[in-house]
Image 1: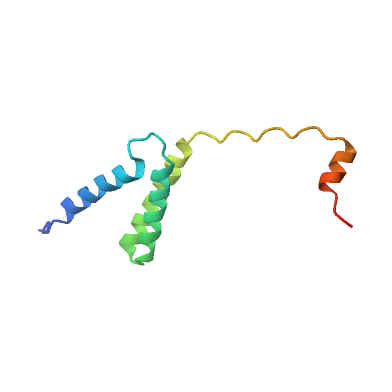
Image 2: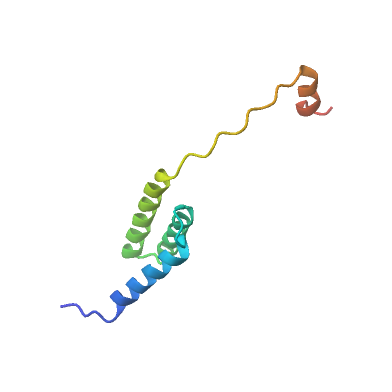
Length: 94
């Protein structure tokens, strides 16, 4: 039988702390996704099988959450330019 030497309570407290600091009550998932990516990098740096599995799981979940984000707005249309204006702005200098 495995002993529970406080690690489970510590993990639950840390999960609550991460949730509070990462999303802070907002519905924006970007800070949470960024935090998951940071944690996956830290886990991968441990270089153990368990840590690498957790890093993979964090990245998979971050990718899933990123898919839920709305698409960014399209860029504004380019203004119409005459040939002379375009050449003045973009032509290479000689």
